[in-house]
Image (cartoon, rainbow, N blue to C red; front, side, top):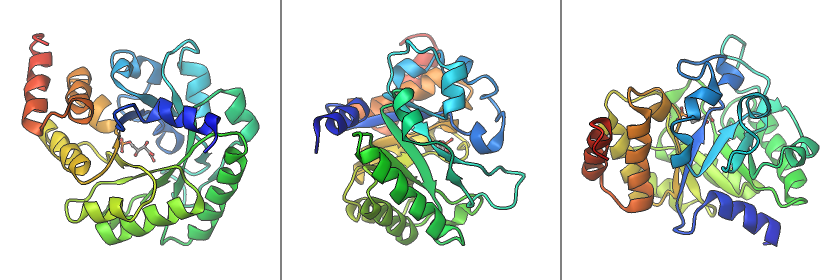
Length: 265
Ligand code: 5RP
């Protein structure tokens, strides 16, 4: 692996081998999602606890201070919306010149395996990997399910992660599943990060699945709504960070969460 690629990956996955990515890219297909109406404001109190921010070029250019001292993972797929026909019908929405111009540390795009757009999204992943590898930019593939949340089980996720890595993704982001998540990670030759999904009912549930996913081999998370849509985003991200980088269990993370809310930590 060349120096540039290694350097960028080391900005994302920290020295302890773990990573906490903070995605605020939801507007690319959902519009002004709740709590993300002003993405620059949303991340102000919490970004310092993340290892990288994930967003589109529009949010990057318009809402993020260029002097920010955080690596950026730029989403480069889109062109569909929640009011359109099919969320799986994504395309690449920018290319390598813009990726380099914006000086991002990595790019991400979704693949929709098992849909009628499987071939399109996987071919786009291959094209993106070809462009980015030339310049040492890592591609993170997102194994997306659109509205079909029930697809999130180990056999399907393992297939998606493996295929994305085979095509050349340097990191894969996928959903956590309670049963056999270790099989998803074991079958994937590149680091796996866990996506969040819709907000959980309690904070404890988030701490539980993050912890379990890490125990089963994930290197970290790419967690959005379960941080910035919660009642206490700073306490939430600090609890998650404690699991990822400080070896805390869910109970300890929850204790820290309560202490932060009480102003004691
Ligand atoms: C949207 C994305 C998001 O980055 C991803 O879903 C993570 O955010 P959340 O934790 O809110 O699900 O890729 O397609």
